Image (cartoon, rainbow, N blue to C red; front, side):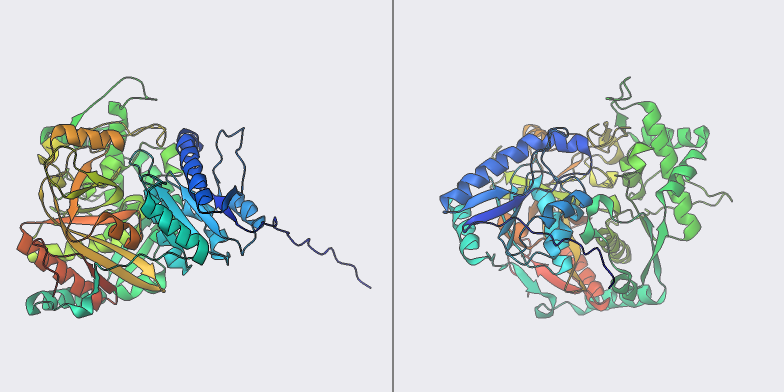
Length: 554
């Protein structure tokens, strides 16, 4: 009789009644994990006390790694080993004080049968809420049931009440009273006709989305499957960052110098130093200028209507960060670039770029561009991290003010003073070893439309709403920069009819898309036309919040 080597069945650790398991997903960049570990310890300490106050015990599923100087799950493989030892029926908390890579834990959460709770601190410096929102969007795309909570102080009564509910019932629900289906809202005939005509044009004369390597930073939620994207009329051109690296190396010093001179004449300033490891240098910026030229030439060669560069893993070890490149691409007023035949590429127009190759933002940005161009509204748009928020400490407003902030893709047209209001600072070495310039500045006041495309129930969805950007005193702006990342551009955003907790409960991504309009009525019309276009493309649309005056959409 044949003998077989049967695999040994894994035996997860048995849990006692009242025990709850905790896991902590981390960055894939060990430098970030080490720097952020202290903040994670604090959230786990506070969360442990909160769980114990409800009569339960919190048990960590994986140890502190002395050699690595942190206790995060740092890779997908490590996460699989951790989850192999977890009983799939137990209550499980994913606690996040930092940015995390969702694919480190997504596999285990997909196969977990017990209640899942994602929890984040409320901190700008330690963006656990950003990491949690990405994980929430990824779980939503994967069709996994989960609950979510966040807190500035894990001992506050509201948080404890909701935590106890989850511990006892296995779920906690946030009521989305600020959300209405587009089907319940009357869109004026002119805006509906425009949106539907633009949708029909896109599906007939199809568009190309250039993707320089998918899946940046484990963002499962940021990848649109072809069977959902293609019916909109958009198709991917799958490009390689190695091709971008090579094309960058082929750009001459003269061409890079011409782009750099254009930027300086436009008024942008750079804070240079001499130490390549810690300072921004002119050479880093010149290399970014070469990447800008290379990206436009590749996009032109393949006929791309929008592009996204991953840049975080791989490319960051070969080139300075792409942030300056991305912001230039998203701006109508930018340095001119010609192809090999001497033809001007994308004359007088931006080439919409979606930061961190977030394809949901790419599709949204392309739709925005076409709607706003047809309506004669500003076409420059960008994603931001939904980084943090706080009440104004200066007495300027009694409204809740969000910090929208992203390392790249912000067009100078969004900043106070435009190009002249932009300052280039070095990317933090914790994330970008080879540096590179950001486009730092303060977003100008004005009326905005915010949105997010995401995947739920194997279908494209869009949440869309209105808001404004306000001016805060320099001291308050600096306080918010000091609480987040001071090298990055900042937007002081107020969302009409959507409070902090409503946004956190409903938003399905760490990213939020924003675009300006010339006036509040223009922004309302542009929002409705875009909603009509998205609906005609097969996207399920939710209208969030209210109009500027607080009146509900009707």
